[in-house]
Each structure stands twice: as structure tokens, then as C-alpha cells.
Image 1 (cartoon, rainbow, N blue to C red):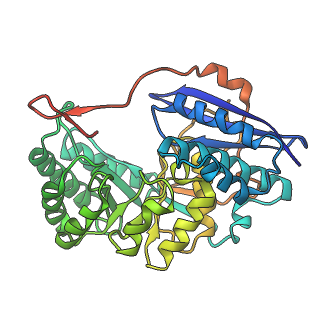
Image 2 (cartoon, one colour):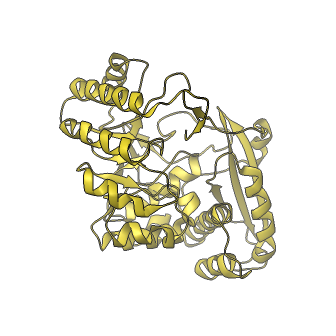
Length: 377
């Protein structure tokens, strides 16, 4: 079997763009992958098209060799756009391999450790009472893991106000759903160390399952400071590309949960290595999944085959999403993704439907401080 063509499909759905890649072979088997850097999809198109010359004519089953060529073949290491492009290609190759061998991808990663994968979903509202109500609604739908975010006020994020508001909303959600439901909070890199420490200490009585992305990703050394002051579990890593960026986090045990993004880190190939490395430090994985049906499927297969799995970010799971573009998607039931029996990733892609979702230029949401300065969304 040989790769014959690499196609890219940047599409707009809902409030954002997505980028899918389709790799075709001379035996009629195709695989589909997904690019993970939101609002940089056209850069991803360029990177994937550039890599296509290294792919056409290759055996798609020779995944590790292809990964190494794409990562190291041009001497200068790439950054996150480069790794997100490799990720999309890598996921598509695993899809092809599963289809060629007649097996779900998780069987190629070691086999089925669990029949279903528990997911978390988002909650929130304009007031603590509204957040409590959405929490109760989600639990009634079958979700047992919930996540809220550190809050802004109409696009303005002042750290001290955000900490007070977030604690009030978290406390209301906890009171509404009781102790048996797990609640996470996503700082989303919006706070600096002093405010993250204040937030963590104030949340401790309400037993968060974890605090996610409590700091920006540029300097992992700073996690030493936060770790020494906060007793709540930390979940970190969704920005990281390659296992090397996870190195300090894992080796120094600066986080309790590894937020691997399969569509940024280097695909299933690299994600599996990070997950196994994390296992040696008793760090569980919570894969990042803010993307589309291919990301969800890839995460599901990794989760099914990984012992040190905790919970899966649900993202769009449980909603009707691009059903004409993806007429077959992985199964879902009341807060759980179900291990599929179909070969490959278990999704089907109709490229003709992509024309219904034309790409739109734009940028992601942005926040500012009261003085007008920019701050992380």
C-alpha cells in the first residue's frame, strides 16, 4: 500500500474553524486526521501541503518512520504549527492502519482496557445560581464530571474579581450537585501565580477534581511555586507539543494530570509515549478535546487503551456536530464515549460536504483588563 494524495479541508462550523486532513492510498483506504491550533488553520494547510511531498509514495503503515522524517527530516525543528500538522497526519495514518488490519485503533495500541470512557462537560452562567442550575441539569443528563471556567465580566478580566466570582460560582455548583459529582475549574492561563495561588487556596474546601492550566505555558519552572502553595490537584499540558515539552512537568511531578492534546503533541504516536512516561510517575491523562469528531475519536482510542486514564474532555461530545461531513461518528451515551467496534478510528468523512462550511478568516476571543491592556483569554 502507498500514499497517493494528501488533502486538507479547512471548514467553519458554529463559532470557529476546524482543519481536517484526508490521506488516500492506492488500495482505496483513506484516513482522516485533525489539526489542533485553532485560528491558525491556513498555516496548518500550508504546513501539511509542504509535508505532502514526503508522504506520497510512502507506506502508510510505517507510522514511526514517517513521524521521524516529518519531525527531523529538514534539520530545523518545527514549532506548534508544525507539530499540529504532524498530529493531523499521524492520526490519519493510524486510521488507515486500523482499517487495513480490520481492527479498531485501540487494539493496535495494546487493546481494550475499558468499554467506555467517562467525559466531563462544561457548566456556567451569569450568576452563581445560574451555574448551579446548569450543573444540576448536566447531572440529570448523566454527566458525572463537570467543568467551569475562571470568569470575566463582559470581556474584562480583573484577577481579584475573577477569583472571587469563580469561588462563588464553584461553591454554588458544589452545593447544587453534592460531593459525589466531580467538578473541575479551568483557569485557562488567565491568572498569574499570586492569583492562581489565592484561587487554589480558596477552592480547597469545595474539593475540586483539578485546577486546569493555572498558568501560562511558557515557563513550566513556575509550576514549582504554585505546586508548593496549592494542595488542589493540577491538570497541565494542553499547549505542549512533543514529549520534550512535557519533560519537566512529568519528571518533577509538577502536575497530577497530563492534559495531552493529540492534535498538537504529535498525534497518537507521541501521545502514547507521553502517557506511558506519565504512568511511571502515577500521573493520569486527561486528553484535551476542544475540537471536532476526529479529535474526539482519537482521544477515545487512546483512553480505551491507556491504564493511567482519568477523564476525557467532552468538548462537542453529546451534541449533533457536522453530521453530513461526518456521517459516522464514535458512539456516545449519557456522559460516556463508547469503545467502537469499527476498524480504524470509527468515523467516516464525506469530503463533498466540506463545501457547505467555507473557511472564515478571524481570530479567537480576547479579554482585557480594566485599564485596556490585553490579557489571556
